[in-house]
Image (cartoon, rainbow, N blue to C red; front, side):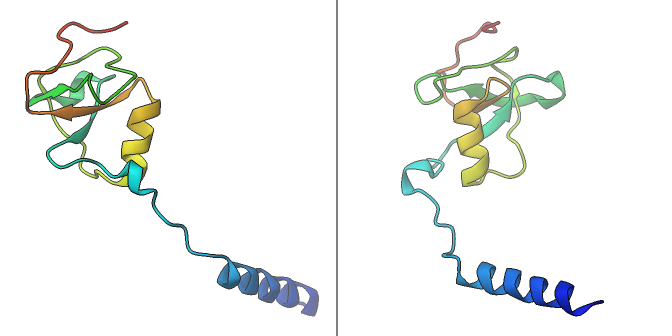
Length: 102
């Protein structure tokens, strides 16, 4: 390893250490009782969740009911669900749109 590469790596590490930690937007926290579901593939069917159209502006791509939650329900996945047709916010209530929205 030459000196220039080592110096560049050190500078990059210092820049990363000085950068402020990313903070999650409190408005993007997944509300209690809700999950993120994949509505594009029937591989995620077989559960008791339905798409919650009152929260998710995109709705379902193909499948809107009998969905299973995705394994990870973090802020990033919730944000993705709010902007994606393939992912949707789901709950166990009766708020699903029923038929697919495609």
